[in-house]
Image 1 (cartoon, rainbow, N blue to C red):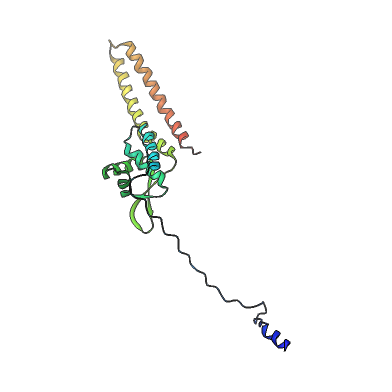
Image 2 (spheres, rainbow, N blue to C red; image 1 turned 45 degrees about the vertical axis):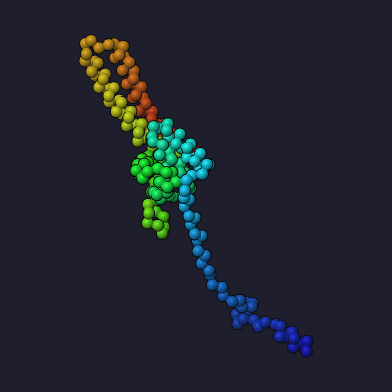
Length: 198
């Protein structure tokens, strides 16, 4: 009787002799978590404080406040944003949003990206503010220094051709021209240092 019970409990070995057979498991495909919805509505107090910091920062460059607001919103978002999000959350006009994004793209501080499943154009910030500064120096300051250099060179030539030119004025123009030329030579070095990421 006991032997009969033991024989019932014993499981038959598989034909290959490698132990008990186990049912095959089919791999399951896990779907990626759904993307978080974009935040809408006005900025909260903390978000507004950070955006205002960028407004003050970009004001040093003499650009409109909307440029700082757009960059600040992209910086705090941590994800690409569509065009209408800037208008809705910042309360700025479509024209200001369009011009601000265009300016930031020219500086290399913002780029357009594609979002899967959405046909709209999305924008993403270069999160290092140094790109903002370096872009401004290259796109705005450098051309101004070049124009200034040409203008001072013409003024020097005019004064040199005048018999009654004020020597003090000629000397001051000469000094200013030298300073402007040195600034033009030094600016690429500054831009290169600014681009170094910490």
